[in-house]
Image 1 (cartoon, rainbow, N blue to C red):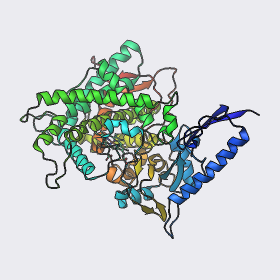
Image 2 (image 1 turned 60 degrees about the vertical axis):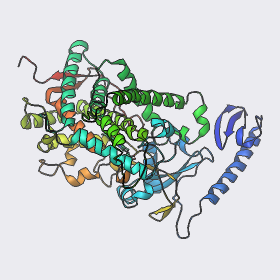
Image 3 (image 1 turned 90 degrees about the vertical axis):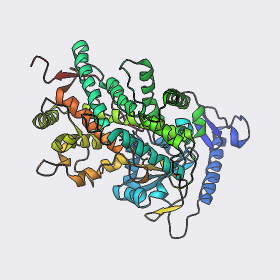
Image 4 (image 1 turned 90 degrees about the horizontal axis):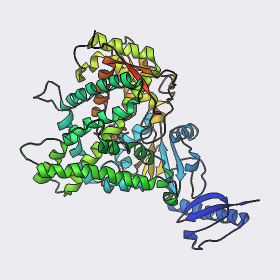
Length: 542
Ligand code: HEM
């Protein structure tokens, strides 16, 4: 019988065919061993590991450790999670309940599901569950100073979050006096959407069919660029396209359950994408730094142009929470634009492209959306935020696209900030927590036929308004202290882009091509790229 390779480094194991090598914490250098010896070593190791593991966590009397599947010692369970952790962890929640524990590498991870349990953890016990784990990949995002990903959960984090929220409000959704639009967000999205209609029409004319995501991403990124930096880029700007193209790689590595975050040796193996991840973060940060430097050089206190200017202004005025006497570096304040720009384009691009895929997949539903827009907005003017109430079916369609795709399957991983108890289970401080949004959106106790695409489910029986209770069950932006700060921008932007596109264009699949709606797992889940074509609903000759 052939042997196999087991490499153990600093508490991590890696196995492959043929020989046996043991390195690192065993301190033995490289040894060639027989299969029996390896199995014996593993058994001893497992025993030591389990003893240490049990000792480390002292469960207070009357409480229990969360249940969960037994795991391979040191490797944990991740190797068995497969390519779709959201499906695997949802299946495990059926077996073990809303709170269960898996071992990934040397780290226990608590997985939370179920609407009530999530409300209990993230809202009622919000403080205890509001941390972020110190994951290896997160250290490279925004040079470790990210509001979103860094481990820091302190007063500084709270002030930075408030600052980011206030800057977003001022430059996106606050009422706009010197514009024909209700706010700057509406103005920017309307402009970008009209350009997109022109591009899609021209691409269909010249090429027959095209990949919509390639163009949606530039239009959406231009909106957040306008808010953050007061500028936009052409659809063929190579530097901008280069920066935007990193999103796919980013969301794969930053997703819940990336094995390289939990098993250190995997970061150094050939084929591991961690080096690429580090490089794309450097590229992204350098792009932002260049724009921020331009802003410092041209800054005029009496003419605050955008979010970056307003953050520079905050630094210069030292307005930040003077009462609390908390010092925050200028870098950490102005660096917030990195978080906003990063979060502001991939999520919305992904959400909007899913809505286009569902339109193409369900032509009858597309027709109903068009009829509603024709009746209530007509052709003469662009859709506005205030039209939302007039378009309940359209709104229901967008909500159902959010629910059915659940394109943010897990929130960004959380971490407990103190020892806590949830539904009788003891969860120690610093435990990594995965929040399964996909499970809530497909829970058959909450939704009838959860796997059927049915916009109607979000409407009241008369079909004329959104059923508030149903729409509040949908979980895509997290909840509690870490809830997305761009939620209202995200919802408005997708609504405005979507209605402007559907008002003028009919989307169809490329003849002979089937659409593959299987989501590809990541922090945001994408559909497979495919080509579509459009028909202009009222061409210039009409
Ligand atoms: C459809 C669009 C969007 C979706 C589905 C979405 C979803 C999410 C989710 C699930 C989280 C994590 C919540 C948690 O960890 O519990 C999050 C966090 C965050 N989002 Fe969004 N987001 C969207 C758009 C935006 C936009 C447009 C911005 C800003 C311009 C933004 C900024 C942020 C920030 C800064 C955080 C981190 C909050 C924190 O850690 O305290 N998001 N978002």
